[in-house]
Length: 141
Image (cartoon, rainbow, N blue to C red; front, side):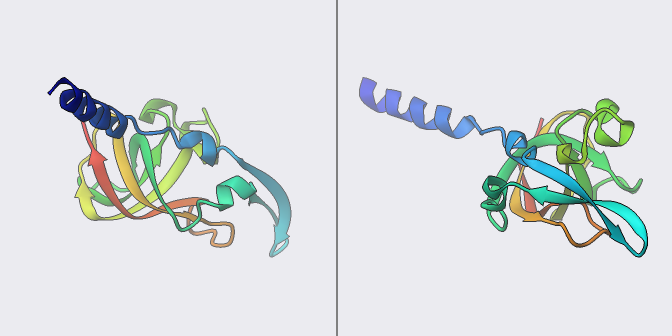
């Protein structure tokens, strides 16, 4: 009985411990190039980071709303709280992921866990360099 209880505890402890994926997203550089006579920075993803393209990942982060409608199905997820986010000048674009989900996620100032398919974007300037598609919330405060 002790062994069974210990095994159950270990399984739950391992499942509860989610790896921090933000350090992998930091494996990006930028090169300057010209597009329509404008100089722009294009992301250059590491080979390690490229290996996650199209794969399911989990991220713990903070919701950055992109509209004021309340519950959102498209928003940004930041590795940093709202008051020190990338848009506030405290970090780089590798600390933000664009999220697309079928769920309506209510804004919270607490960190949440999201899971979805990672898309690396180095072509479409209308979207962020990282997109989490088919995302779903897996843990909330």
